[in-house]
Length: 229
Image (cartoon, rainbow, N blue to C red; front, side, top):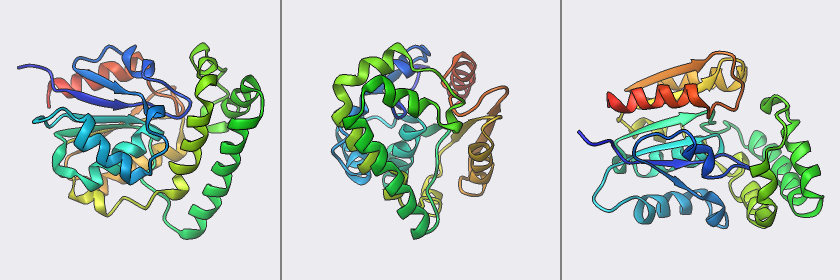
């Protein structure tokens, strides 16, 4: 049996290479920065109606920001996808106050992405506790020419603009693999909670990992899951 097509969405300050280097069979990585002027809902529609191969029901995959975009597409178009692989993603804040506070934070990041020297911006971003002080990569440094698109994403795709998707995601009845880093306490707990949302659900915590889980171990786990889909 041929491998399913996997439509994969990278994280913030990421690129298609983040997925491509995992060499997962059938994977098509989407460059999110080409679409960052859209709302979450608009991108979900474009992803489903225009990027998704015609006549196919692929698996949708997303890491962090890309995971939230994938969840949006799953909530709005549950029958378009054969399954989902979600890594280190948030299903949505649960109060208006939390959303307003997060939007303020992300609007500040959007401003910084436009105005401060790019290496300085990356250093500040990567010092965020959830990213475990990861150094800036050459690929991140190479995104300087796309900083306007990245700035738009900080605002338009902020967690503060996202609805709580837990209830609408209950309509998604296809298999879901949810991966988190065991050291990423907040997102690992969110992953455990999603067992109450999805009827066909597997949560996998990768040992010795924080928020950034797109690595060879994740690739092995994802490929094995896809092989048994």
